[in-house]
Image (tube, helix red, strand yellow):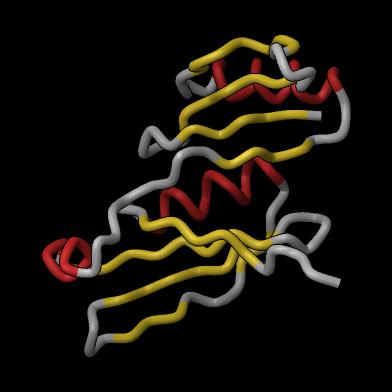
Length: 128
């Protein structure tokens, strides 16, 4: 069985991003991995279905750019299970001050989703 093991994202404030996913998406988090020699640190954030998001930070941005890596991703879609949960989580995030880039709606290709921006303006599609 082939499946995605995890998705990785470079972030600027690793603790803030970790706290965001734990609070709003009921994720669990492993202990922080730190490589002092490279100035690298990461967490694996696990969702309820055991899918994982690796959040990574490096002290020297020149090192990150040298390998043609940059902060962020295009977007990540997180399934919350129902239309009502899409609506309620979007409202909670908006109330807590996060930017709603697209209110809940049915897209042209049939997805019911909203799009919010995480603390570093990465797009998250919240979908059924």
